[in-house]
Length: 121
Picture 1 (cartoon, rainbow, N blue to C red):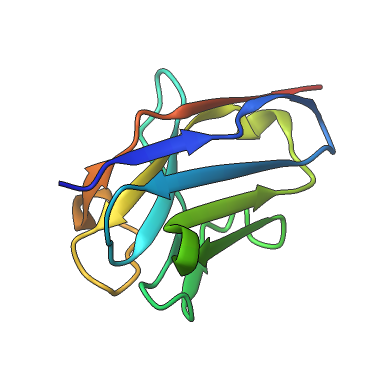
Picture 2 (cartoon, helix red, strand yellow):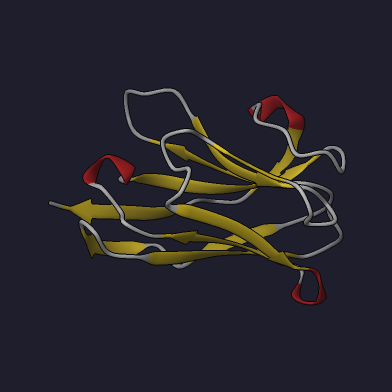
C-alpha cells in the first residue's frame, strides 16, 4: 500500500510562488497533481512518468508550473510560479497505475489527503 503525503500549501499573493511536495511511502509509477475547488470538477494539473523523463501539463498552468521528482527521496514536486487567484484550490498528489503519465484521474490508484493553496488578489 502506497501512502502519499502532500505539503507546501499555503496563502500567497498573486504573482507569487509556492512549491508543493508529495512524499511517497513506497515505490510508484507515474505521478500526478490534481486540484479541486468546491462546486467544480477535479482538474488535472500536471503529471510525470515513472522515470521522470515525460511530463504533461494542463493548458491553464503550462509555462507557470513545473513538475519534477526525486527518486532518491521518493518525492514529487510541483513548483508553482506566477500564481493567480484562479489557482486557488486543494491540490492532490496521485500515484499512477502504470509508468505512463496520464491526464485522467481514473489512471491513478493512490491519492494524498490534499493541501490547500490560496492565492489572494
